[in-house]
Length: 292
Image (cartoon, rainbow, N blue to C red; front, side):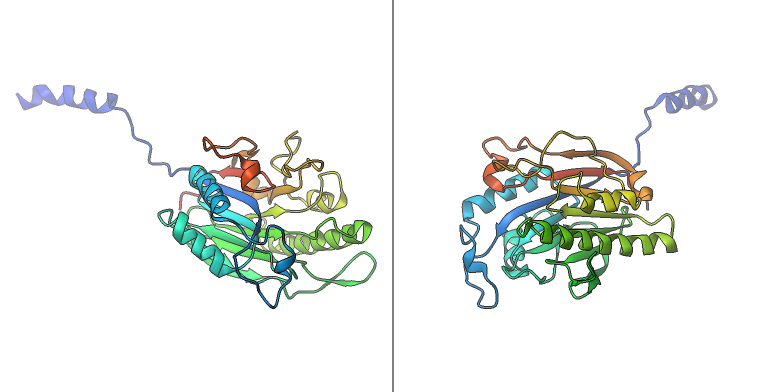
């Protein structure tokens, strides 16, 4: 009797749907959350000149709801005042998302820094706030905020560089500073690619520059890929400067694993306008996992 059933069982097993074991895509978000200051005056920073002086509970809740909706594995943030404030925000509003906080004090005189949240295990972390480099006129420069480099391990295996380049304040002199910052970033990344042509890295954040200018041209000409190239969407959302100044520039090896890349200009949360959360729209990029 069993021998008669075996062919039928074998046929049923062959026809049974196969369950995919492929891990989900890696979701990375980059977002300038606009003067994310705490309520206390820092006597060592010019934080008091910021208006409004701190992020209200209502605005923090709006930012949190958007982050919860995106449910990103890695979040690169710009304009965070300090680690304590960011950790308090994560504990209060994002406590069930499993994020580890990475933050260093940078060079900005107001105290706005870059930071990273990740629920993927992390490796080495480097701040380049102390390095010096020359601009095109031979003047010594430094990162006006920081270049934060975080190794994201797990099934991503990628160095995430979080940036917030020099503001437009200062016109041509500011352009020179941003271009020197961009050249310094490219030098670091090209050094890694020289050691390992398959090097995986992404430089993301607020570049304070439109795509046509040399700050971005240096990175593109140096081999980095702008996955949102050609988009008509802008990232700075306040009139009259509706422009694209936020990017996620990938090394060729990482770019080969890109699934999607977009500027998010419509809120994923009913009743929350992105424009009421910050003056920048977020970037959402997804990658195929390494399968490790």
